Length: 402
Picture 1 (cartoon, rainbow, N blue to C red):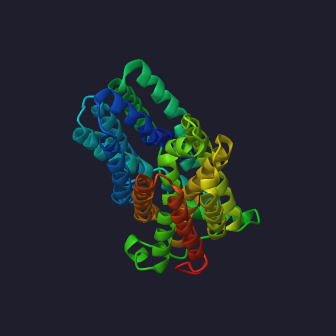
Picture 2: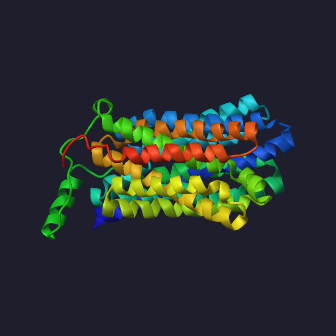
Picture 3: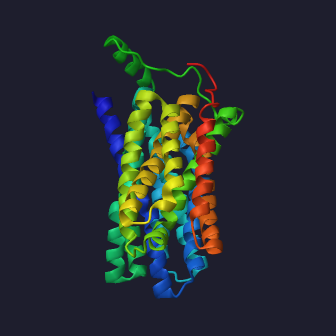
């Protein structure tokens, strides 16, 4: 009972940490404020955010290894110092290049070190049959963060300005992340065996990995590259809509209040992470992926027809739920295929595909919109990528038999 309680404490702390890491979602508001207060160009205002995404994805590899070897507490504490410090320093700089260093480099690295240390310790406390649920709960924190961080940031900027907003959020993030990080621990040796005996005693069955793959072994399997392509193609669609939703609302529905759609999308982003985790536990991650990819593909095909706030809200809900679901099913897939012992570094390597999707999706959409004045071609391209990802679910195979 004590260990089960400890597992839920770790899960709660990990979810709380992710609620802070959602600070990444404030940039649409911060970017606008930087343009207004510091007279930055739109390109200058987007640079720290873009670098932050890239750093987040790249650092996940090294951070995952640190988490596996040194433990989640050290990784997350270090990440909290980097992110909090980066935000605080951002309050003292006004040059785009310097803020790219403070928010982009330091902030992105901090998010990577913290995020890498949240899901692995939480899922290790529970049977593999519950990995989807636990993963969904933990990553739902990032999705829900936009619901409270966006209005909070907007209020702070209106009352105190962009510099003090960075300072306030940075101090809060530094304190909260360091405190919650101390609750992140891996289960003791023999925990899985004791859990297995307890389940079997009650007449149940528990899946146990026959092999725990290291990252070098994982990179030798075709399944990893199939997952990488699938993650990149599917995440690019969600990131494209998230990055351009307010412009899409104005362009397609002549609606100036696209901010509400961003919050609406965030709510379904959160729900998608939890529901997908539960569905993956029941039906398996591959079948769940097929549903997610298919729904998102149809959504992209229809997105050009969403010409009213109501239709855009439906499209945003489907986008958010499908995009959020990715953060539940892909960690489960890595744990299912390659084991949980090296989950941090293994998922970190896979997560680079999200960074790739975060570059190609928004940039491609922006370029097409600048050239044509419409996002229609972007929707078609995204739909094609999603269909390819869906087809890959029929050919991917587990690297070992259960």
